[in-house]
Amino acid sequence: MIVAPAGRALAASARRSGFRPLVLDLFDDLDTRAFAVANVSIDAMEHGFEAEDLIDPLLCLAQGRDPAGIVYGGGFEDRPQLIAELARHFRLYGNTAETVERVKDPQWLATLCRELAIPHPEIRFARPRDPEHWLIKKSGGGGGLHIALASSRTAEPGEYYQRRVSGQPISAMLLCAARSKLQILGLSEQWATASSGKPFRFAGAARPANIAPELAGQIAAAAEAIAARAGLVGLNSVDFLADNDGFHLLEINPRPGATLDIYSDCDGKIFVAHIDACEGRLPTAPLIFPRAAAASIVYTPIDLTPMPPLVWPEWCHDRQKPGTDLRKGDPVCTVSAEAESIAAARALLDERLAVFLKILTESASKEAAA
Image 1 (tube, rainbow, N blue to C red):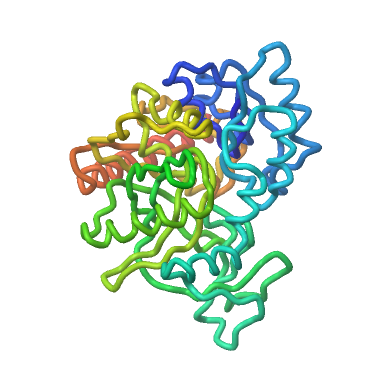
Image 2 (cartoon, one colour; image 1 turned 90 degrees about the vertical axis):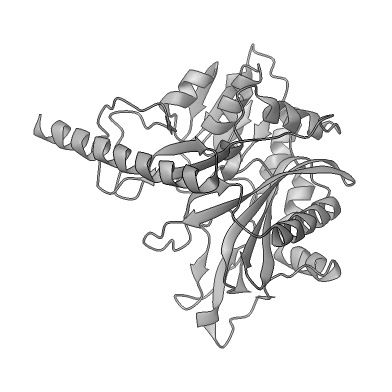
């Protein structure tokens, strides 16, 4: 079973590996339906996953199908008690509630980084006197949606201040089987697309990150050290900001994350590796991804009421259903590209984004005129 805000990437990886996924998510995309044996979507976009909305639909989805276990994606870091509830009903293929609660505690992470001599931005729980140099983050937050400029407001309960540092966002993808057994799968670079009230909304990622080999080695070593001490299992990622002067470790994402698309593989080895790693086994040979890859979320530039039917290019994923009402800034799909280098992958991605936006706006105009 798969449960995530958007379950398509995990479902596709599971299907490629020979599993028959059951999916619960928030979007019910066209390709999620195609990959899943059965799927259900719930209305939790505003408040996130909650036990009273989640457990009964999962139990109904599982009824008569005897799932081997459950893999969760994002949306649980700030509610570890819900992970514990999942574990009461299903075999958990992922980090325990206790592990997630620990690694998403900003004070715990800051203390560990200090012990390991890993650069980490200063954090505070009282409003600083120079808020223009600080961010507000939510404890347990993920995906950039929880980050605000400290100059725009005061932190609320459950939030904290983190000193703002500069650099290129870099994410290390790790496969962890135990404290001393882990593999770095790669480093990716990421970018954001600001929207109203969400200045750091995740937009896309590409790999391998275009950074100096020495810096890449330092980041990989920091990710390995922090992951080993955290006791992570399965697929996880560690986020950094890097520039010519070095790097800062920002946070741990203790689950398969937004960069899974750029580590896709035709034979499904990465999903099997996640399951095996949760049981304490790493692949006998390191997973290798020879081609560069890039992927970007498309946020609609206009209101789509409703979403028009489209002839979808094969490189579009997370395809919204026709008839869905979307407001400007809502996600429509994910566009992906592969090439021989990251520069070529980014260039091809930009071409495809332009093509898709033309398809989308022309289809919307035809629908409105009909």
